[in-house]
Image 1 (cartoon, helix red, strand yellow):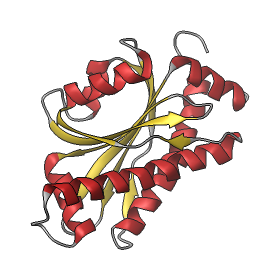
Image 2 (spheres, helix red, strand yellow):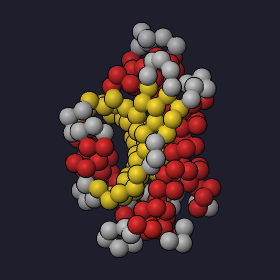
Image 3 (tube, helix red, strand yellow):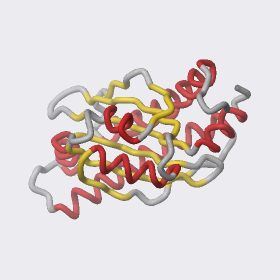
Length: 198
């Protein structure tokens, strides 16, 4: 892969995101009682921290994120990110109550992130023939800038990373929406594209 992915390479990465995030959102739909969960058309780009934070609504947006590393031939970070109010709505849906202790709410979000990430990486693994697993999720609360900066540092140091992003929204009340982001190490992106023959 050249310093900037070609249009054909970005199309291939978008298809990877479509397959991986499609499975992730199907897993999420099952967790929220079979509600319909809509998925946006995925994006693939080479981006710096500030550009990724803009995808989340701007650097100062308050978010809750579950951050998971990847084990196997693909290296990087998977983020399940929601605005704070949406994460509270998801917690209430998962626990069927709004007054649950913080420990229970965080446990429910972590378990959800683990299931969603496993579904995403399993689908990408099926596509590539690789065995991919998520690491234990870590919950992060703060501004989009802070959340992204920490994840980017884990993925590639302070460099630009290949970002695969899609948005999801659950139909019905309460409203729950958010994003799934894959931040891939540049070398991993090259290996993935080579595996796909692009």
